[in-house]
Amino acid sequence: MGKIQIITDSASDISYENEKKYNIHIIPFPVVIGDQSYLSRVDMDNEGFYKLMEEHDDIPKTSQITSYQFEELYYEYYQKGCTEIILVLINSKGSATYHNSLLAIDTFFEEHPECEGKISIHSHDGRSYSGAYGQPVLTAGQMAEDGASADEINEYLEKILVRRCVYFGIYNLKYAGKSGRIPSAAAFVGDKLGIKPIMKIWGNEITTAAKCRGEKKVVAKIADMAVADMEPGSAYQVVYGSDRSCADEMIQKMTEKVGYGPTEVYQIGVAIAANAGPKVSGVLFDMKQ
Image: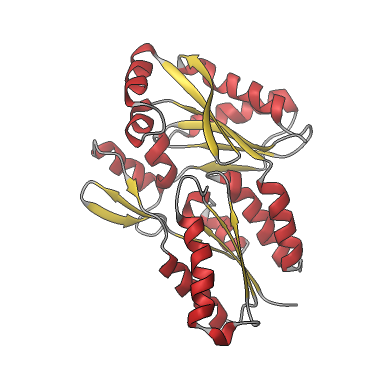
């Protein structure tokens, strides 16, 4: 049995505890806030980033993970004796990171021909954000710990990533407007009217699935939409930002509707908050077949 290493990026929002528990390597995204550069998860935790976001009017700016970084990482794990590297990375339509990982595979074997046939590298487009691909990464990590083969893990990821769906509500449209996720004018008018959009992430795309007037209706609407689309009886996860009460409310509402709680609760980091804002709530689930 070969040695398998699971790798993802910090936008997966996997907790520090689960990072260690499942032996997952998490590559931090670079982020600029104000005139300072930071590494997410490395220089400070989420609360530290949220505090910085409050102190600066400009939204944070994140950078892609480069092909050179991936090449270095591949060689590092080759030297550690790994025979299989499996990556699951942020939505390819929102970042060049996934494509850089593929480019790095070719370059890696060109520059290190001695590695050919001794290590295999498989990279998967996470197709989404936060725990929508972070949760499959945890399962892949558990599978590796339990002795599953790389082929079994890759087959699982190929089947599950295309089914992962997210509904999430945005409470402050300032960040979405400035980041280009929705038109700035619409964001301004939406905030003035108290309109809160509910976004859907499905098949690499982010679309507006519904709109609510006022914050009080957001959680109930998201729960209704998630329950209608999720595989009956399947596991789901909850995501939130700077306000833990949003997660608690979502957990209560989803538990009322399906009769059981989430398997994980994800707090979004700066890579996601830069586009959605620090206050969000949402449900992550497997779309019914």
